[in-house]
Length: 104
Image (cartoon, rainbow, N blue to C red; front, side):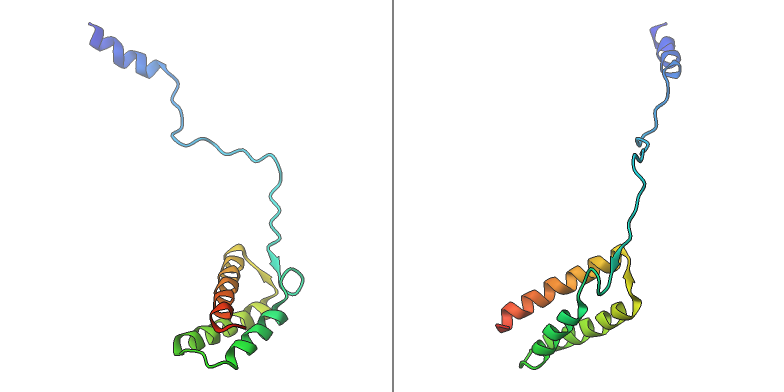
């Protein structure tokens, strides 16, 4: 008899969602990154030019060219999404490592 009472008790309890519901208290305002207002790409391009004038290794030269192409796209775009801003952050970190490696 106690076995039959267990399922009845379980069905009488309120069912909860497995994931808690998110509640937003404030409006979300993510304007993103505005190129030339939040980020000075001109300075980044000058760093790239200085690096490209050095005797870079083949991999570093290819990486610098790839970054220059991507930064040109970002300059023309203007507003960057959060994913693009993260990519820009990764580019800056990589350029910083290259600058330290080659003593710029």
